[in-house]
Length: 163
Image (cartoon, rainbow, N blue to C red; front, top):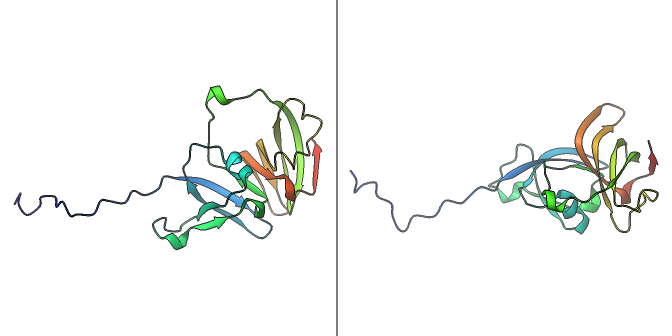
């Protein structure tokens, strides 16, 4: 029996499935839950670079390449990123400011964490097109949802004010 079930040197290696992290995306037309591949980077940093992001809609087969969508950062309004805890040595002291942002059909309230000197200049579109808010609430005509973090595309916002 041992001879029947020995491992063949010609057997294909198993293909590892990617580690997936949950992510929620809001655009002007749709709101979709799904997943992205796990990474050691903050989602804000990935979005700031403007590179397309591989996104797997909820319920799609991660092993099927046709299931993955290319998500262009400029096309999103809001992103609820995967959970991420930055290493203590990378954390910078930031000034906090309560803000309200109108973007598309949504009103987002939350806490902006701004670099010193930017407290009075919330319009950071040129240097920081995506602004993460903590303790955020996304409200629309039909509902209101609270999230730990929401990343806002400042290039698409219509209004930004202090809360």
